[in-house]
Length: 297
Image 1: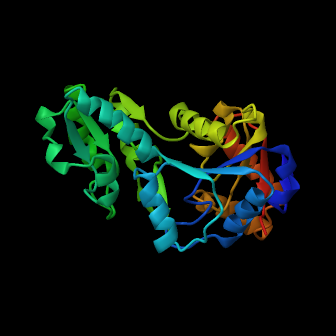
Image 2: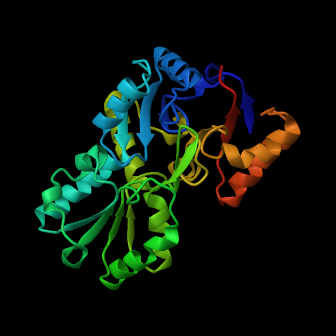
């Protein structure tokens, strides 16, 4: 592990950055200005920045959220790819083949961008596949309440299209379950799950294709890509599969898990106790990836 205090210290090693959004750029309510500033500075030095998010919505809606809700300044990224975009491409092909969708999640504007016409959605007994964008409600829920519905899906052997592999999301300091939590339960029942976001390869391949267009004269080498993220189950293994280095943001989705270590270290992210704790957590995920621990300023 290499410890840094500023992203600029390692920029010379990379042609591009693949950065997460939630937990790195904002927490759905508050922008993280230091991160935006660091990415903007990276672009000024010629490093391409592609945002990769497990949001089940379209890129245009994520951009709108960044501008109008988060009010993050412009100019800190070159392109963006969402898990919702990947899901929409799959749905388009399935719809063309006459396959019908049962939707599990909130029927909001995010979902509508992925599944444009709610009138085309069908009841479970008529469905050929399930699209899960979120849970059916945002309020506090017990995942076990979904078991009867998931069991029905399994009995019909319906593919489960998971447009957000995250288990939870941090919205202004409150954690909510995501589609990934239900996908895990469906897999436990023996159901088929198709993931469209991180850490799975399809979304990274699209990001690599976008990068190739941004750098037409450069041979794309994963070792020259820095992945930035806060997810031990998504960003870290995603970087590992890609063969890229990782800058891990500890004060993100796992902040609560790290609090026990912070109490003993006074919040010093460069203390041996704290870095050892993070290394242990990463090893528990069964990955082996070069990564940096940063306190960006």
